[in-house]
Length: 320
Image 1 (cartoon, rainbow, N blue to C red):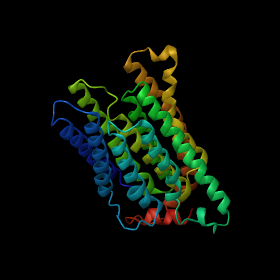
Image 2: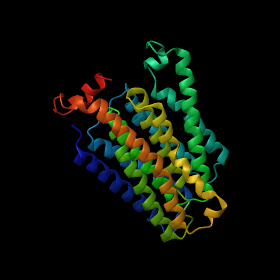
Image 3: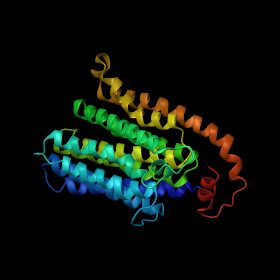
């Protein structure tokens, strides 16, 4: 059965490691450059997520054979590498965004590699259907990534990674309720490392007197990729509905509502609170629907499944 204590431990480890890495790397010098802080954020998120997943006792096998393995071992490391390159001060922004959009285009194909959705061997899927799904998923990822990246450069604010972390946490719970326990559990350390890295970065910029936007692009980039990956494996390898996945993916974009003229001039804490409130509305709705569907379809199965470690996840997925 799901172990809440284990999930909390993974979140705690991810958060502590991420914060320590950012603070240690950034505070070695009095002046903090954009490249240095971005590198600290990238390393912090990579180590935090890796150690958090290790607490969850996830197996690391190469070559990866499952969508979740490819997310953790290929897609997210690619995002970390791209953000590390994008953080170079002399690198043109168009090059950084070319790399990001390239990843957005190939990430769906990587996650679905070898599955019936791309081979056309499934009874309900053809090669054409798989190709269209890859294109739509890639466009959705690029759209969300682009808008949040634009917002971070336009107005900044720690509320953006907070909203992204909140959405990731909700996505994990929703995927778990849809029957894919391990896939949903991955979101816990991911959400923790997003918010911990953002807080540590905020402290560093306040101490050094530099712009609060430093490092924000890297946090958002890795966070968006992680959120997308959790939702995609939940949709294609679990029972997460298409509607719920799309709503969760687009929820952080509601932060843009605060750019309306009569809201943008408000105090930063009011703008941040409004952003989180707006994002929370669709999250609550999706989570409530997922809980209703779980109680109706999945809860009766749990009463008949043995509770030995690892058995629940396997047997639930066999009944999908």
